[in-house]
Image (cartoon, rainbow, N blue to C red; front, top):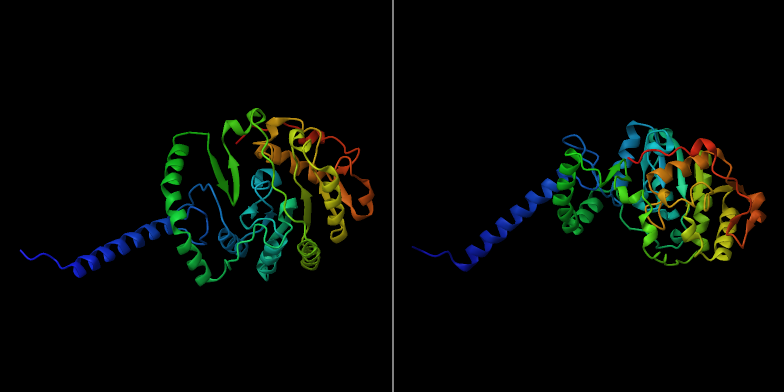
Length: 339
């Protein structure tokens, strides 16, 4: 019996390996664990993460339907329709850097522009340097998308079995999971609502440069929104008292005054009586949970925390925000059942 030569065996091995990789790639594309594809061969599965290409799929959603848009970081990732009260797309996957936000908004022409209900933009202090949180990829270009998916294929393939197991657990009634909704991440973990994070040390939040050039793009975003007739709500994240105590308040106050040099106003939700003192509103020292997010957006809509350019002098360096802020409105205080 003739033994296959080494070149023949090697060629067969490479072909088999290529066929296997293509099969796995096809399966991951069909399952689409990051919600990146505008097509879906079956009902969309629950997702547990998103990344920059998810923004391309969101653009296609705006071709057909109207949504509120949420921009920001992981600190706004839990803002969903439950918080805004309307169909919502959460775009924290492109992060809150004004460069990324302006790039996305500039793509909203024609019907897409008319399908923007309103915009919520979290101004997170570590997103105002040129390269902060930016992934340089054109999520509307076929070739850029393909190259990104190939480069990140191991990450996608590794997520697939984990997500399949999570979906099976959800179908079996397990609740201690995190699932997605139109880009938002909604925790179902009881530990995200019991304040147990207070028993752990508070990790520091690494400082980032606060650059004038990046900050100036907020003015361009506001001008674009004005031209297109979009209502845009700028706000800063709500923090628990334990985290607020460790902030450099003078630096925080100075940064907020810089916001008001390029924006007409923003909602200062840094510290809200009725949210910040209750650890149950937070999943950890830096992030609201879904219950806290609903209350924070309700507080924003009350306009009690709106600070305008003319009121920049109200920002107290000793506090890092305006003094004499009112407590959370009564209509925002209902203790919603965690999802």
